[in-house]
Length: 411
Ligand code: DSN
Image (cartoon, rainbow, N blue to C red; front, side):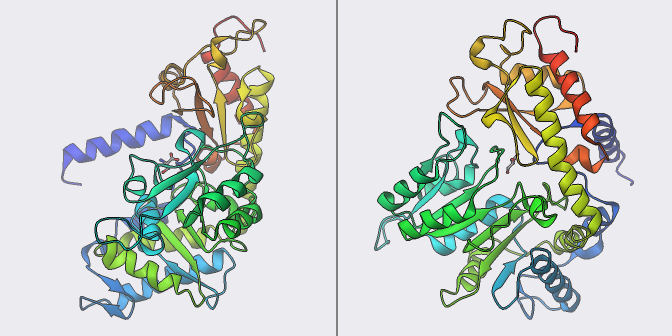
């Protein structure tokens, strides 16, 4: 690369990535093939529209690439092209979710015949995502959020309450999905809630898509109307997103295609779509199945060891690639071992100094602020890609404990 300034910065970031223990639950390391597709000449081309119906000439090859990505996406999640459609153009997860709402949830405003539709999503503070209707996101500005929380007692979803809220609030759409919820979601119960409220069911599987592909987490496709996902988390692809929609007389796929382009985006990034296709192929292999299973085993090992060392794990454990640790523990460290009493901000800063990268995170019913919450979120997808197994995660848990504890301890 001739641009030495950027080259130096890329090299510095490469070095940082190599050295750090990466426990960010939403990150991963892509293959060389994915990087090659991303850095290819495909970036030079405009392809507004969809395969066979573009607004620019010269898209013969691009059509093949986009169709191949769609074919691989359906195949990976065992979907028949007669029953499901997929849009592979969303640039990332947030626009994918907004595109679905644009397509399916009535908008408010002066010309609207009805008020803005309601989006029922997990509240951010309990593990949802900004685009599940939070007020600072477009999803909460143009539509109205009906939030749902986890139970205070168990810290897991309360499906009875979910159903009751759905039937009384009558949202247009319910989102099942999370960025910081460690447990398996019961998609059938979400379907029941959606039926009770007359709502569409959208599953945002961004965090656990790779686990589903690898058979380590239940699939939502039997129950959902629409499924969105990013590609760059457990699915280990480039930064990009997909929208799957059930094909029936409601024509969800046609509405969603129109919402993505021309509704929200311009030309698709075909270099990114080619990289998605590469990642989807990689995720369909037996090696990836083993990887997905190992990600969950590693998260359990990390969670169990931290719990043994007296750190409070939200909901008591994990069924996925992530866990939430209450590092503050109400400011009352366990007297025997001095676990706790560290705010999430300080915890993440102390860990970063020691080369362990995590993010501070609110815990359900947090008494502290989102900028300095009570916990941290840990994920195992990235380090499992680097070959780490349970014993390595036990060692990482002990290292985290040594860095965060406020008193002496021998293991
Ligand atoms: N920001 C992502 C995460 O870290 O979970 C979700 O978009």
